[in-house]
Image (cartoon, rainbow, N blue to C red):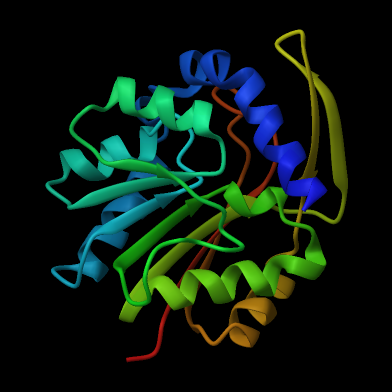
Length: 212
């Protein structure tokens, strides 16, 4: 519980700065947009797509512009405020991916872009199981993360005090965790770093599906 409060309070602290920095980042990430377009195609008319760990809502905005019924969820109430200001036509609400308030079988898809990185390894299956619970049968999860084995701790961001651990994962272990949570794996895609627009790390994009 304390760790989740640290994540929430840290993002509350930097919400305005974070929103200013990342609100338009999808304009510079064509690979990410291609993956989201695939998510939209695979979900089809099954149901809304959730931008989980939405931050200022840049993923939700991209999905909304594709004509998708979209919702955004984030642990930080301040980040939700920023997302709602920037995207008044999209519904956002506060929520914890370890214990979502959303009903079973709510969404057709989930775009979980780097939100899993604040979940320690021993709780990842819990988070994935919660994602599966709120997906409709046949629903699609697209989850992304930094590839590696380390944990990076950050205690200052934009000259503001925070307390965040950034967890890196190996694709093979995430595939194992997804299977443990009951997902059917579809594809794992590895992307090389793009240091001109992001932190220089290798990235993984995993598509999986809740069984029908």
